Image (cartoon, rainbow, N blue to C red; front, side, top):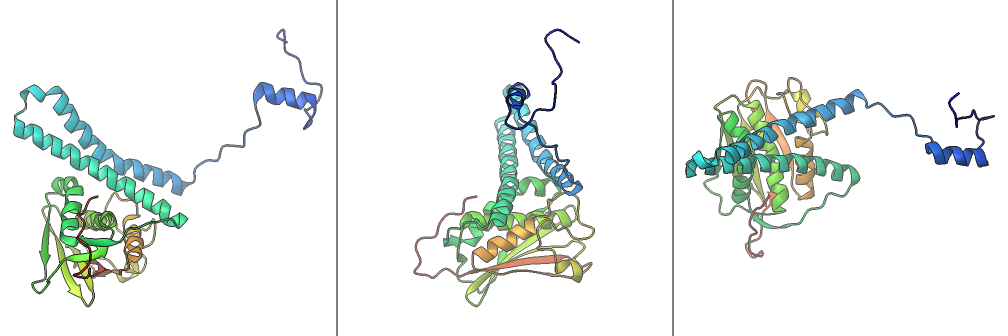
Length: 275
């Protein structure tokens, strides 16, 4: 036996001097490490996958700016800066979704209601997902109903942008390359309604019943996505006093819609939409 080491004459008893010395030398007993479940492992892998593309785009843009800055034309440098900005915005959207999901589970989702212009919010949301649209050669086409007098609603501007970014992302993933995503604003009674329409494969009646659940993905879902976006959309819209739904048939695309209360004309000045 090596010098300086001796076998304990008996197993250390809790509270005796031997036990205290043992704990001092080796530290308290650690619980057995729990192996992550298959669902947890899948979630972590999905989150990593979702982060990979915007991080790669951001890294590429910054590398080109650092290493080729002296050779870049001003217009080319500005385009790289804009691409890096959009990638950063997309990372922010992913982080916001995970944070919102945690807040919903804890019952601490907060909103700040004020007059906002929905068209401004739509424009901001399109900027957030522009990298995804560019990758797929798509564009968002925004229209308003001809009889609509105002696009001001009572809502939380940051939350409205988050709702729209999730719906636009969903529409992009299910639309074919080069397709248009239609965003339309109209009024129904005392609410404004926003519709986001894709021309993808559509959603079965069975999936429509469960698609707004957390961590749910429809059968035959497009690759990517956490299964959180639509659940967050529903929770946020309900917090803002509106409703959310989907109209779809297999083979005919899908229209996701939500409503928000109309802002009174005498309400305070409309807030600028900021993500």
